[in-house]
Image (cartoon, rainbow, N blue to C red; front, side):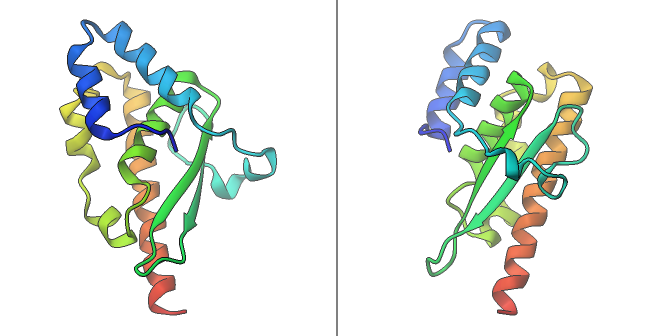
Length: 145
């Protein structure tokens, strides 16, 4: 996960004068993701609904309550930045917090929807839905150890 806070990202977006700079910021954010090993870039980890390839691997901590983190990668620079942004939003939260969190409202504050192509917007929504589904699955595993 990139070592940056959501507050810093929001501030960065506010002070950047145009979307070209914001896209560059997203690409830089994506470069901070640790590379995902090739053996994890398999169909079961691929996010469906994205035009680019996106792989998402959940991890559940042994904390009480357990917290989720994610490892992810994409083969497209801007999409990888969007993935990194979602990692900042979701990683370190409990599965229940993830399911209740309105990430789309957070992304709306960044005005992302208005500046992404329809295919990137659909992909972003698919990533959010996949993360929420993984959190639901983790909750079921906790309830039925």
